[in-house]
Length: 122
Image (cartoon, rainbow, N blue to C red; front, side, top):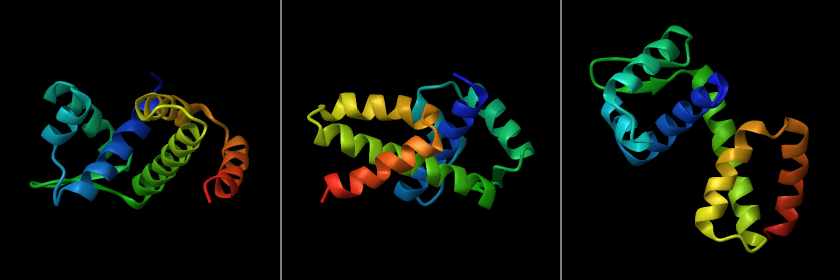
């Protein structure tokens, strides 16, 4: 996994967890990924220093910069997963494959797929 993929995964996880919970803590992220708390703490410190998140006594928050990336990756995942399921792929496989594709697909290809998806998913 590249640094970019890891960053995108963490930011998307913080975003999705924040949609489910009032506050997102490091332990929530550790459970989400089945990672150790120290592993998550190291990554969060790095992402905080790079300006993607803020951390206070109670929770982890996405900065505007982090939220932009999280929303982009979240949208890619959702669109790709829906298309794969529409093509007959089972939900678990579609979820897994969408996760793989969300990181490596160019913006140009994703936009073409997204445009086609709007027609296909009507």
